Structure formats: C-alpha cells, structure tokens
Length: 134
Image 1 (cartoon, rainbow, N blue to C red):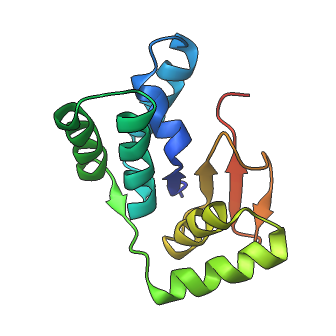
Image 2: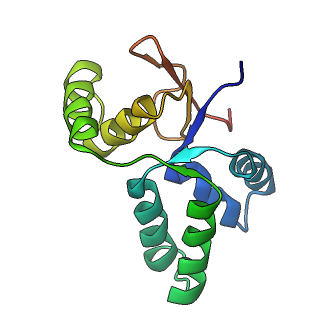
Image 3: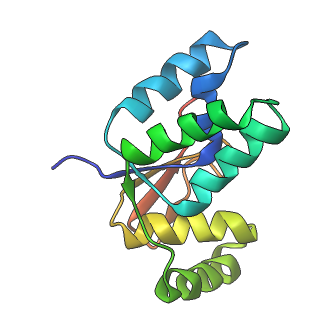
C-alpha cells in the first residue's frame, strides 16, 4: 500500500527557492507526486509569494493554480475545523498547524511533510509528520 501524502505550504514553497538547491530538489520531487493539500496551503503559498517573495500577481497566481491542479484538494469542512480544535488541544499544536493536520487526517493521509512541525510526531496513530529536509 502506498502512503497518502499531504504537503504543508513551507515544503511547497521551496519549489521556488533560488538559494537552496538541495531543498528545492527535495520539494520538487515531493510536489511532483500526486499529493493532498488544503485551501489553507494554497492561500498561505499565495500570501508568501506576494508578500515575502515579492512576485507579481500573475506569477504568484500561476504557481498556486498549478499547485492546486496537480494535487488533491481536501475541503475545510466543519468536521475539519472541529477536528483541528481537538488536535490543537490534545497535541499542543499551533492553530493553523492543527488545521493542516486535521485536513491531512480527513484525507486519510499517512504522511504530512512539513518543515515547521514536530518531526516524527504521530497523530492519532495514523499520520506521521516528517521534515523532508532533515
């Protein structure tokens, strides 16, 4: 059985990195596989592209559109929000991290690639958070 993979925005954004070719290569290979994302990941990427990377709107829009089209989108339903609140409390996650973890669980993913969350944490005996750059 193949793992179902969810990608956090911090991993997806390394595809655009001009400085670290190792992280860019790793992120590129992860994004190239059909993975799961959420609307939050799309809009976090869009915000970083515009504010931090100072990309023009057209290029930023094209990047997030291609990311969305090459991934499965997990909806942010009421169930995801309720699960995120539970995970926030139980695992002491940051609020927006809890929402991403909840979306990954709802998508039945077994791996969540994230640079910012606790590497190796297993959530609900189902989802393992992995920092792919370690």
